[in-house]
Image 1: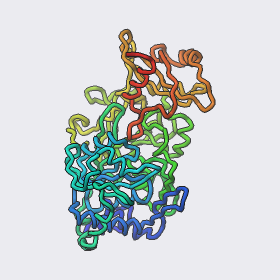
Image 2: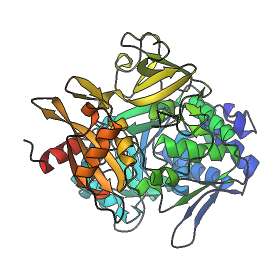
Image 3: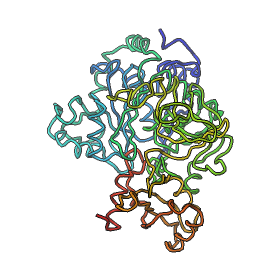
Length: 508
């Protein structure tokens, strides 16, 4: 049986192999702990295996099998690890959903993802997810026979706690039937989980796009987790603080799975970046960089489609291109090129689109044709812009975010970076608003440092000293962190930010 083919978690080629090998190798050592105001929640490596086995047998008894699409909403902690393990070990597709998702976004993700079953943590950081589900799907208040036109494949929802809405079943729906499936049958089912089978689907969204489901296979997830563990030098007993949410690849790969495979303990706290106002995908302020606890290796670019970082640099920021670590080294299983509009590699000193292919790249996006995202020779189009500098690649910004002002291209990231260097500015978000004369008008939304008073006339003078005239914002608006419109993926919604600034500036 393939699930028992290795006793070494590092040698696992699929998730059930890794799960059982880690339970044997690390036993009752702490695997995941959640620290809060009360007693810590702790689960061991062996405990995850035992608890997920019972839940997995419940899934199987309810007809969940290989390829079944099961969604779950859990915050960082032992519960997330157990549910992920229960789904993945039987060959079903685990679809984690953001704890920050709002009701209208939730409907879109549930419909797009085709989930058949959904298991949710009842409460997390003051949010009642049973109530949020009912806000999204009022029919859940009526009864368990779920037949919704808006989420046509969803058949059951499970949660815990008292006073559940009529349409949400309690955990006995799964636990009460688990004993009807034997350990022997579970082992045989795990034996038919292969590296080429899909393990997870990560839902993300760009600043302008609807949610997209990024598929990842068992073999690729194991390779990426092994690589990250090796690069960070993790070993049994190490304490690794999860500063990113596990429902994204950053938290799942960098903190949970890489630590799990290596025998390190993943420490979760109720005050993490999963609930902060740090906007992923934008230029981070120095304070936010410190919050990310960056240390060598200096990870460069990464994305959901590559299950985390696919490059790292020898320095944190390259002179002249300080948006992220330069791409000095490429991770195992990846090939990277910078290409022109015809997908031909650009020369030294030239800028093009960064494209990536390899074993660990997502094989597809759910419901989307490959031709829309992959080149004819199999490279994924990242949309990122890179400048070739000898053997190094410098990230210079997102292609889709570029502003066309008076016939010239303006990178919002470059302008944001310069603004962050100014006294009193904590962060800035730069967008282009439609303008009859210039095509687009460069506008900046600015967050002040605590206690600072912003003088935009002075800032304008300083920006003219730092940037070419066409890159300097023509108008500024002061906002707070709470004003920044965020997607459920914790990225800034450029579309909503544009609408906010249009309103504040009175531009029809």
